[in-house]
Image (cartoon, rainbow, N blue to C red; front, top):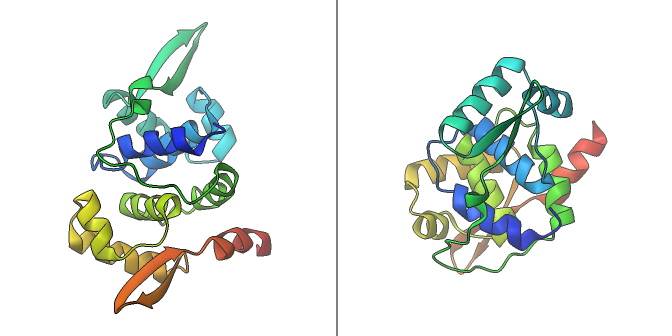
Amino acid sequence: MNDIKNFEVFWNTIADKTRLNANGYRVLVDMALYGYCTTQKQFLERRCWKQSSVSNTFKRLYDEKFLICKLEGRKIIYELNEELFEDKRKENKSVVIDIQTFSNVWNIIIEKTELSANSYRVLIDILLYGATSQKDLWERRGWKIAGVSATFRKLYDMNLLLLHEEDGKKIYSANIDFIINEKKEE
């Protein structure tokens, strides 16, 4: 995908799907971002995950109708359900990141297996829309405050978020430089 706006429409379709786990978000975002169809084996080779994780995740995404599959020869090919790209946003927010920077960050955070589904939801939202307070995010998304608060704390402790105060409010932003440079140092 070469358009952050199309990705943002997709993100708004799946961001509030609480039935998705972290691996579900990881697979869907990766497939949407890079626009590929895949077999489970090809995905395994691309991302080096455990086979059981890939198999369980693809089955669940298919069962929930996030993925559709077709048979080509003897291979089952999975692709994103096109309905995920229909624009059903309640509000249009400005996107503050370009597709290349988002892609660079994504290629690092997708491998962070310690991140929960809520961690991916919060971090991707902040990457797309920029700095926010916990309250602004949970009010805008309608998420539970306790989950958002714990997630912000975890992401901040992992150095994935930066914190500053503005008019007495704690404002968090994505620590993009740290994320990108962290991978280079390894």
